[in-house]
Image (tube, rainbow, N blue to C red; front, side, top):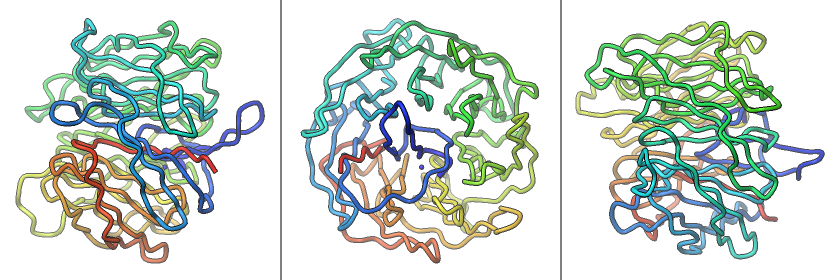
Length: 391
């Protein structure tokens, strides 16, 4: 998802674009033509779910055909694909077999069947790992530990397995909300030039910025070291505008999106707008979850859990600030994640508490979302979805 979770890798690596929840990659990619994809779904296995599931997705018709369970794994909540399309990685948010009760798993992909073969697993070195991303060279994987309040990097081996840890950085800080008594790293996002790692930390009200050593994967503090958000925001996820000069950060606690100007040379952030993700007058309990930017940069989307909508915003062509368009009901509860499909024609909302994935048609001219009637109920507790093109 495009500067955010969509990327194209060419040259020595296969030219493949990936779309979905697990990325955080920030290389602009055009809208993909209609084709066939495998859609992998991460879950929480606290109920009926058993691991990672898959669908065969036809972007031309929008149809989704279930492939069933493709890998048993404990709480593989967020997923990321390797740029060569051969490997998939998952955070295991609660893994009783790991010392920190969190781990990172690697799988090889059978593109004909969608099945995954387990390669190896490493301890995440921090409680509740909640997000991960593979860099654009395919050499490193980065992980955000929510419970541990830390971020780590690991080297990847040629066979796709996870190798030695390159670094582990413990965040320090807090903020004003009761949920912010300690740091909570919530996402890892790679800059467009692959030189920096950006880490929204819910507990600190900051987006931490690290330089990536291109040879070793080691992380070191950037100068400036962070973007500062309004106290009580609780930054959860972020996305870049395709132009690379703006970033949008969604606040889980105060249900806002903050627009920043971004300097790619220094990785400095300058705040310019804060907007609510909620309809005017809404007073119930709610929190945000996911944020997406359309590939053409014309619209920004954010999900509300509790209000149970996807908020749609139009992007000003010059300032890149946001204006509300609509608040689309997601026909379920707790849209922990949603994703724009590779063609840009559809949006899939992963509704964790109603055990369904709802498909919407996306109007490219207005940004609005309309339910197509296709509701996927084969997967319990869906958390995210990533797309692997196969034809």
